Amino acid sequence: MTDVVALSAAQAARAVERGELDVGELFETYRARAAAEDLNAFLWVADGPPAPAGNGGAADGRPALGGVPLGVKDLFCTAGVPSQAGSRILEGYRPPYTATVVRKLAEAGAPLLGKTNQDEFAMGSSNENSAYGPVLNPWDRTRVPGGSSGGSAAAVAAGLVPWALGTDTGGSIRQPAALCGIVGLKPTYGACSRFGMIAFASSLDQAGPLTRDVTDAALLFRHMVGRDERDSTSVAYPEEVRLPSAERLDGMRLGVPEDLATAEGVEPGVMERFEQTLALARELGASVEQVALPHADYGLSAYYVLAPAEASSNLARFDGVRYGLRVDGDDLLSMYTRTRHDGFGAEVKRRILIGTYALSSGYYDAYYGRAQRVRTKIADDFRAAFERVDLVVTPTSPGVAFELGAKTADPLAMYLNDYFTVPMPLAGIPAISIPCGLSDGLPVGFQLAGPAFSENRILDAAYALEQAIGFDNSPARA
Ligand code: GLN
Image 1 (cartoon, rainbow, N blue to C red):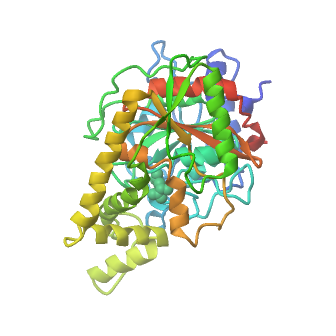
Image 2: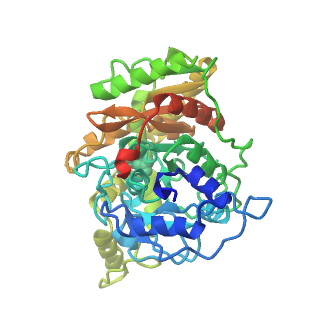
């Protein structure tokens, strides 16, 4: 008998295709694991396999993704299934429709296994902002899995599901992937439809895969992309998404931001693994040079104005009238305020306050307008960098997974986690995090970013490095 859980998603799909693995057994193996888990990674688990959803993609009628079950972050709307965005205000909300990417993946043969825990409305870097309690990191249960897609990352790392969907607004796919020792890809803005994703910051949000390896990320991403008439910011992906195969990096130019070596707050163990990975890249034929990203340092400040500004507007719809929680009041206004008082957690309220303030008429240009200009500068920096190098590389996160509770009292310390991940969504460009080794027994992530729609190049480079690194993520699945 094959050890089902030892197979990557691509391997499981192939085993099903060859008739070596029964698709029902595959689903049930993971369903049982997800239903019995004790990391608090899942908020809802399916009772059994869903009815077949079509044969999307395969010419011979067999679904391309082989029936390999999928974990889906709670904020993706899934028809008839709780979709709460980790918030009390949406407790028990079952939408009447399904997000485009989830539908596309189900049609391609990746049925929904369960909904994964997350920071409330995707605001956070540790999953401690979930109204449904924190998720534990399978590498060390006293530590956070990262956020906001912490449930998806922990579930994949622990082998509770073969692969999962997350969303990334400022790092929420890549940072939890790094902290859990798996792969996370944030696509180019517009590559995947946002229809049916409960919005945080609409000009930044993108859906993407969290997987055990780079091949699985490419396979899932390939079936997510495309123009959707229900999302006017989505575009047709300009080329076919290929499964990566590069063994070497000959001719590839990697750029390291020049102030990285002096950046404060990067843990020495993270820096060591990063340098080691650069050395491996050179052995594979890549050249490594420094690039200037003079405005990247302002990324966090701009992000923490823009994202809350957009969130304050997006979250205005949660008023007790149409969705989820309603707390009655003496009149309409008190019903609104009581519902929002009880329904939103502290971090969400903090963001609404910041965002509303930044958008208020007297301050609009001083904060929002200025942050938008910084955003343009950051995009320009990357454009200039990509004239000299193919990809920009950094550590994904300045540190490894931290102890639960270590940063909850200090929002600024929490926000610093996103230092290396916010510039890319601000510029709309894609980036991946792959595991590059351990520091004190905990996974470290290596980030590769490229120009818009360069996912094939990113995946190829990540794949070549992955083979050379040989990271073993099985301990987290024990
Ligand atoms: N940690 C960042 C935040 O709290 C990023 C979140 C995200 O990408 N959704 O906003």
